[in-house]
Image 1 (cartoon, rainbow over the protein chains, first blue to last red):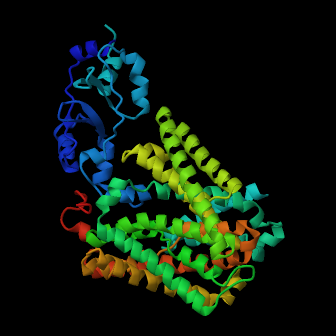
Image 2: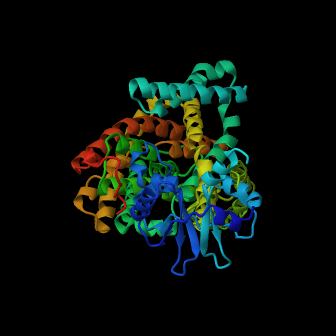
Image 3: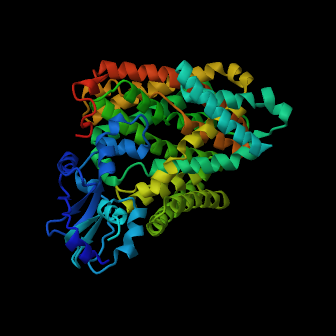
Length: 142
Length: 406
């Protein structure tokens, strides 16, 4: 099935945040939308420029609960900046005309749970939730 | 036999370290070192016919390359800026203070070995004195739920100061290898510049390659391959492998951006294994007669290093505008010394000319590690208490947002 067809039958709104937002602001968005595990960072023109996952954000904000740190994590802990400092700039997005079966495994390898669908200008059209794909897969036939 | 021994060292070291830590509350490194000592020539080593110097060197070089890569990749330029001036100046002051006081003290005492100029031993020990063990300090901060500006400064400093230590140690080795300050210049320039250039190119390449490798396992192969290749090139072309590996990490992080877990997370998982190897190997080389004979040198090293970094970090922190609560206590929190310093001392064993200074350095650093891991923990706790930061994380919102970085 093509991404555009899936979005018509399973509409899911992507949650977005500005690059200059603080980490607690991003956390508040996650808490506001408990079903969301990935939020997308969009620039002033609405184009996707980054991605922030729930586990990464939780790891940053709860670093003081971790008994051991690598040097990299130590520096992250004491230099917490805005969302842009922690987002993954290499976001794997789908085009509306791409088939889910062709790109799904790439997303799973990157350990992201939602698949963003963007237009030619990288503006978000929607998001394909892996949970919805799973729900569909275990539905009884017919 | 050697492969069998490595397996025994890893497993028995792990068992002794964790059991000792669990039942007696001693740092794990104590167990690692004790297991190594069991296989030293004085005990089982001679009986089993083991010659540690012959087979540990390639492992030490690779393991040190792995740690140097992680040290280099600890921070981005942007993060360094956000760390704040006072943390940077306190780190520089701490490193400079430890280096200068240890160097001056050992020159004054006239400690030397044959085959090296009079400043050789003081230079090696002074370079090793600049290294700190983050794990022990993080454990104390976690255990006592410390939070506040001093905690932030300590966490930032322990993450950064080893990078300066690696540079100082690399230059010191180049100076010693050249045997003379004037004749050393071209060699030092080559050792450093080649390491920076080749490590830098390697960092760029590995970052580009890692984008094509989505699987964690494949990235680990690429990263370890790059580190080993670089260390091997350094050996063949006579530049600093330690500095090259650190530059590899720094540039890989630079090009990979802040979100560069993919370049470091797989390698970070190897760090504890590297330290088990370092400490057990240090135990293998540990010679009780040398330690007893040079007991006063161990004490001197410990006192000079501690005094140097307390004074140096105070001056650095004050120059950077840090409040007295940070300046007066930050040096006390930085006493623990561990794996990286031990690994560097072990590296000296690789060159016959450094054999005597290596034996001395390994014994001093190993014994001083045992001292700093215990006394250092007490000093860090004292400093944090004096700054009013012990149990500060329990102030009504434990588990909430950590505002250290604010």
